[in-house]
Image (cartoon, rainbow, N blue to C red; front, side):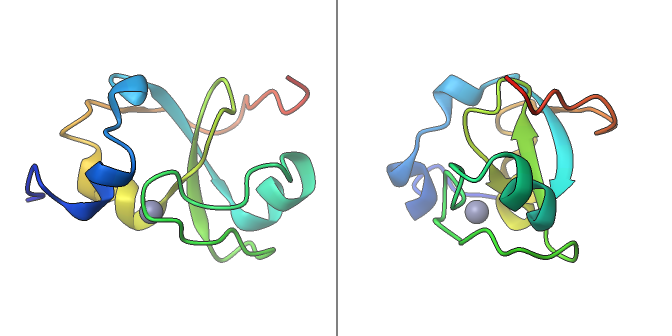
Length: 91
Ligand SMILES: [Zn+2]
């Protein structure tokens, strides 16, 4: 369980992501299609160009969330995980 004073919530309180629908993707896809996203919006973990690093990305592609932060905060922010097949990278 994550504490409300977790340091990552000081970086980003997550309110803009409350109840967001997020798609799972990987570092390679972000690197290729959304290179402006370089790190986790909460913990600043860097995006690596690899299919072995999982990421979660809201449908507006405004940021990316690393796997650890996704798992730690998904209940707190009531994120809805989509299937990842209909990411519209062109937006
Ligand atoms: Zn993170």
